[in-house]
Amino acid sequence: MRRYLALDVGDRRIGVAVGDEGGGIARPLRTLRRRGVDADVKAIGELARREEATALLIGLPLTLRGEEGPQAARVRRFAEACRRLGLPVDLHDERFTTSQAVIDGARDDDAGAARVLLEDYLRGRQRSG
Image (cartoon, rainbow, N blue to C red):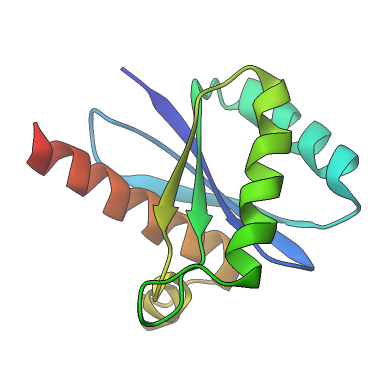
């Protein structure tokens, strides 16, 4: 059973959540301040080890029309950098995750968005078998 570390990657912060396939429930962990790709990947690797994550899920910021823009290209480059951690990396549409986290009353919008992202992804995997 995979245990995911989910990332909501922004230009200044990365929201982080964790959860596994079994329960379909995720919990927000924290928000990391961006310090540069190498430092960010190192911090994510440390969190992944601490949380015993076996895969990364990274939110892909699509436009409202479902297209990829410049921010999606930046996130794809970041996802490639994360591959050096040796964990499988999946990308998933993150549209509306922050607004849903706010509606849900998240104390930390970025980590809450990562939680919403992961729960949406896990629900989709459960439906597809």
